[in-house]
Length: 313
Image (cartoon, rainbow, N blue to C red; front, top):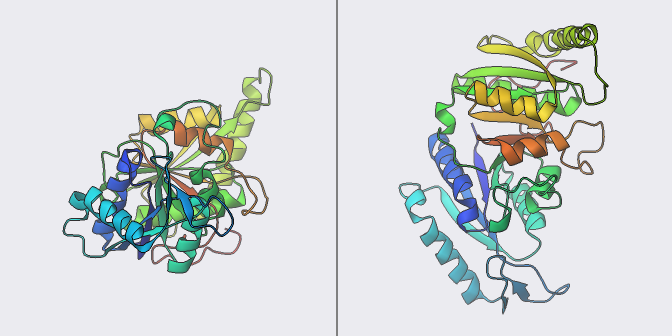
């Protein structure tokens, strides 16, 4: 399913949950896994001084230090890497998001796996937009491949997923998210939940007639845009709700024991390179009990024999 997986890590406990998913996903799919750690930030333009992202201490970069960091990474992930021959450990010095994106492009990665946080004090944080501007935010914005964000322990492994929820608002980016989720569900053989929430945030005490009208419109869009493009895949359900989108996504995912939530990185028709992480997916990432997969571009979404989407998809 994924030929090359890039696991971006701080090589610390904050990424342990993401590490287990990355290694297991790679092993099940016989993918090449690159464990990649950006262990410093340049103190000046072309200087060789870096600041360790874990200790905060400054040191001079040399071959001995690079070798030491790689050795520490291999030891830290020794148990997970056991019986995993297609695993490489690499490091880089620089701005973490820049180096991760550069590495993903260079290796033509099919998927990037990372945690939602790189600092221990951010884990479990619920403050609004706490992750804005973080490494994860910047990687998700510009990555050409899907980004799997793991912020909590994943009790099921990818190959054993039973339920995938794809949340859509019918935007073009959401179409890409649907395409990816549909292909993965068919490949794994699990149930796909196509979910849409009628956002009532802009309406003051909307009447029942308005809600029912909006739900009817949404159901027709789902039939036209998604059901019509299921191909021979029939293991799916349609779910409609009204209310606050991120709250309803989380409630539905919890009630239906979702193993994965797939969403568009953003929903507005803007340049993906400039789009900020949408507030809905950001809140879902912070609170979801299962991994959340962000889709930014149409690249790398065809992971099964379906091929490119039909005209109008």
